[in-house]
Image (cartoon, rainbow, N blue to C red; front, side, top):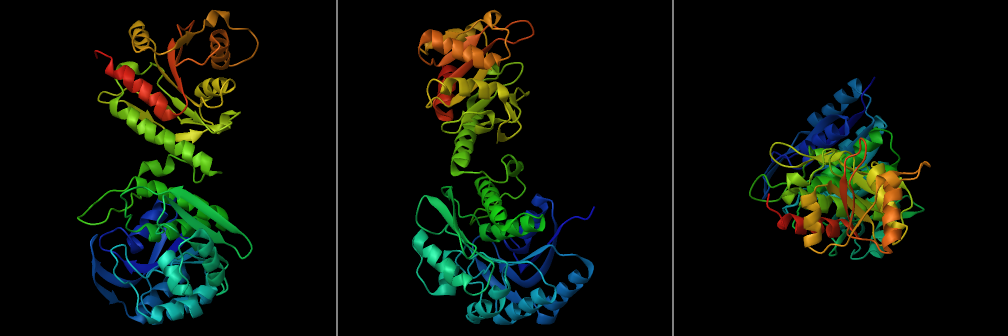
Length: 451
């Protein structure tokens, strides 16, 4: 079976955070075969760009030609092209080989150093953008292309229209540089605007994020995704790469292209509520793993679930697609976070929400008389159910037990437990409005222990 092929035409970043180095890592993360055409060699690190060496035009042109002879290139992205001569050269090659191009009009590095010459802007507007499939400027680049100030989403939409009139099929303006709490991007297809919004991650400069986003879009297009879906998926994957980023030198942080957590979440979430629910759960699980006593982990493992607002079914509850288990050293989460993956924990959450829509989270911990006494000691409200009284009709034990307990108490307690049954491990469940509340309750228990 032929592997999909993506091509990056860009500059080389010896620091490994941006340029063709970042693009190759991105293509590999997507399972796409990456090829490259180097336009410039930069002398830079995570703090500054010291020099830019432009490769001869015939070398750049020959790189494209020899790749096109051998590969069926499914999608191509352009990054740092530096000057008008390179832009003209690449524009002709894209036309010659009828390549589906994602144009990232790179002009300035994260460090603030210029990566293009003055003639670059006019030439890219006249020769390359008209042949582009998707153009992906950031706020500054969109300003350079349109001459219009951009400080709001409405102004981003106006700039999208201006760039669209230059000839591309789609325009994506990246709004991460706007001064607000969310990174708002605007996608325009000539008729419809789509605003994509995710929360910014504090204290992250994210060197190479622009390169990586356009590379993600390119790789996903090569895999056959539609432009709308490719952009949405790419934004969520990029967010995770930034969140898992690190500082390799003395300057900007870089993205973590190889993080296993890239695949922990779906490529994209249908709504912002899905993303926020996933993020809140992830943040709390990370906190939980930092203090969780192993004695709290049941033999069958531990799970925690958090539902969307007004959830009614399994697919609307996010949980661990696996379990938190004991290891020799520390508790470990085996599996990522996803929606619709835990019938057990979802049944508890949904049963509680049938009484109060604000109680959207539940977590199981190991049952023991000691753990139960600790729950009483810290004045948690407690309820229980008896598995032997479960009706014979087909219904989830967790749904029945949760509803039976709440109905009998006439309120939703902090704790619902049972002492097990034949082949069934006894269990304590912690309930709360959100993951932070539930994990905070677990922390309170952990501080009242003698482990």
